[in-house]
Image 1 (cartoon, rainbow, N blue to C red):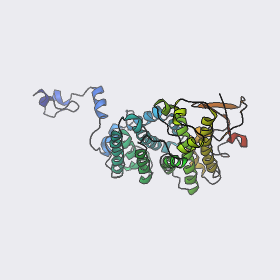
Image 2: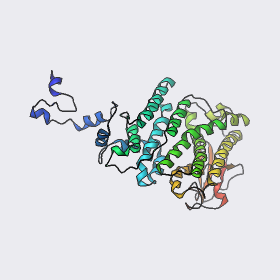
Image 3: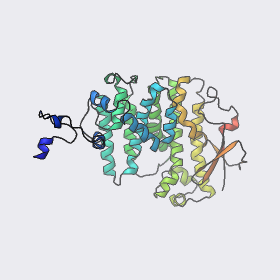
Image 4: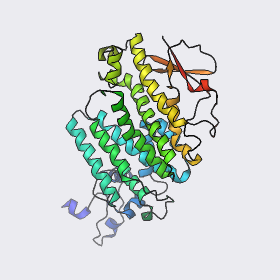
Length: 361
């Protein structure tokens, strides 16, 4: 009876009783209810929920990116203001998909979450986004007509690239090592490169040379990410490095799990890093053809630069070089190398800046 008189916990029951009509819910309760998953939402309700000065969907995406993809967060801050929120939403979408695999204990649960995101992409393009912060933020940036107060340009993102990211993440739910470097490149193409294609669309870039560069940069990023994640995967008794390269040098999974420092293990890292370097080299060959406005999309290429192409010759460390440790392999790179393309972005033109060297501990 008490519940019928008071109405819902977050909305007044209009029964003509002044005391009840003016009652407002506790602020903490209202904030929690707003974040609960619910039915489809309208443009008006989303705009009200994420207006200026409130903890809205845009802030959720920014915080998710800052905590889970800090490099992407920093690089996104350097994008043009009119594109920044859209890239935050896009990268938050990628983070949500990437963390599915590590957040579930059974593949079936992971498939259910991936299916949710498949349907979410379909619903976003049908103007029926679910009440999920990342989904709402993506929808907002795809449909700015619903948000007159938000100065976001319509980007017309290609649905195919979003679905490729989802489909590839679904395939990757199997905890299996890549059989060869080609499989790793295909995975990187469908995830990292697709993300770059969408970023270029957000920036309003439609250029075949920029797309070609994005393809190679995405593959390089995927390979480098696989290398950088090796210690983390090893701590969970998993190895995802290409099997063909490991077999070529006689390295077993147990060698990688035990973090051996043998020459054979270093040779595996060398060959994989060299493949990433080749893709970066191909991408740099387009720097004169790629529009200058496209360069911000490639800012996150910087972590790939210090992987480069390691040489077996012993390195001589100087005050102009920085040492980066990837698992048990230390890579040095000149500090002047900090951008994906030479020329326009004031990167050092010395050929030695495009090479990295390794040494044994």
